[in-house]
Length: 351
Image (cartoon, rainbow, N blue to C red):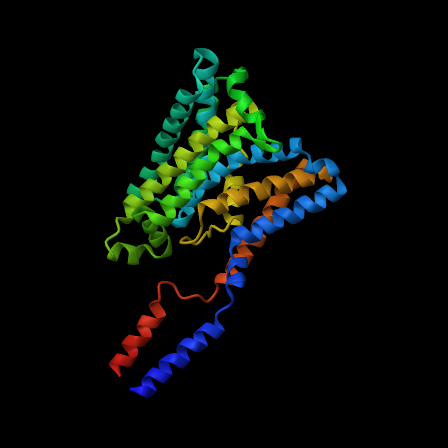
């Protein structure tokens, strides 16, 4: 009895010694690493161009990151569930166009505009949800198809026109600041980030999303409605894309048939840089926010360094590749859901 207790004590002590300190574990969190990278980029850019740290430029950076943050939030739900949504930019563009014309032609005010944008996003997100969750098409094929369909609808809805008359009562939210360098629009989206973080971390649905992304078969055997979870993640992605369309109008005061055409991969890049894994089961809302700000800061720094716009997408691609390589190295060899350990126990029992 004493021997067994001593063995357990020694084993516990060894585990404590072998575990990295808490500060080292914190430093491994992607949000902290990316936040540190933001500080480095800002410091280097400010040293070369002092205006980079001005309140006007900081407000521009935060306001510019709002739309991508909303798209990356929805993308994170889908990717954590081991899916992908290539149509978020097109859905955002459709929302901006539909809501923009209602504001421009019918005098729609802000709150109804937000509700309309959310409804547009949910409708088109549900289209993806049906194809992936019910028809069972591979996510990349389904959303690549809807990307083409939704992008074509942008041209149909605009009919050669564009949104260019948004009242200042709405656009002021994209330019006014509550504090130097902190735009109003940034504070308006923070509740969405907080609610998303709470849903993913503390609700049964959030835990189900992680379970489906980690191992859909095991989640099904545990009683989780896998199809329903997948369906809802695409609806949520559409919802955030629709809200992103309204945010785009607030920030840019206009929209056209090409709105959102380059934002699909940018949203995915922000989610990946923020720590959401392409393989599913890993990610979070705060990572989407940090990844979006990091992308915006980096692209702004490239502009200050007189890097041509042609090369900026290549820079984003390099950042995504680095993030994926980092993920593959830090997560390589980790057992999923403890299955190797259970297999080993069964083998010992058989002997």
